[in-house]
Image 1 (cartoon, rainbow, N blue to C red):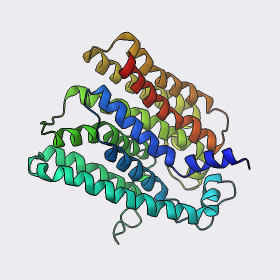
Image 2 (cartoon, rainbow, N blue to C red; image 1 turned 30 degrees about the vertical axis):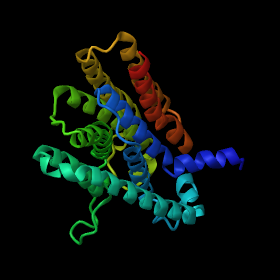
Image 3 (spheres, helix red, strand yellow; image 1 turned 90 degrees about the vertical axis):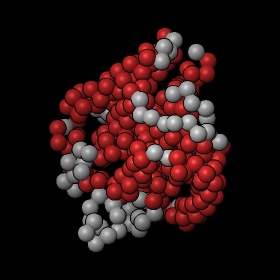
Length: 303
């Protein structure tokens, strides 16, 4: 295998790409909410936490279906990924300690609403994988196929839209409040990620069907999933952003640039009529996260 292809596989299969997307989406959302960017340490922590979380599920793989290229890759690179997890854990702990040091003097000033928001995200993320308690060990949110995309969308939207603002406001002694505009931006990001997750469920249709996991595509079929679920959710996400942009009095060109990822989302969804490789899903579908964030950052800085 060519060396460059090995690197590409490592970036996508190793979930480092997700870490990068979490950082760029956090920057995009901060700029769109007219909030100053956080420290470099903050974004390193976001990168490390995201990569750690997504890699966790694959480290327990001991036997892989030969048709599952990602699982096979993890089996072949298990030692390297274990070391990666150790290093990223150390990096995250150091960064988290530094961030907590900045937050510590301000902890008494954090409102109940902020605490609820901050704690709701890791609790939801933990429930997605399941908690190792006797009464809950066999239960996790992934088993609710129709709910799974919305859970992932909620966690991503909170991490990239709400967390950067709350942290920024706390360390700068600025009172945080939930506004209609921040809610619109949250819904926009939530719908975008949710649609991407539903697209991934299309890839896993056969496995989900055999496991009786009632995802949207298993319940209603491919065509109805695209036209009755993916496209409407994309329109909801785009509409909420347009409302947000008009309220913020964004220039027309800035709004136009931010609509491109949603149009691409619909185009890619339509292309899923034909079977695609795992790298297509990781590079093209998840690549829309990077397209969205880079487009949004560029639009805010230059238009």
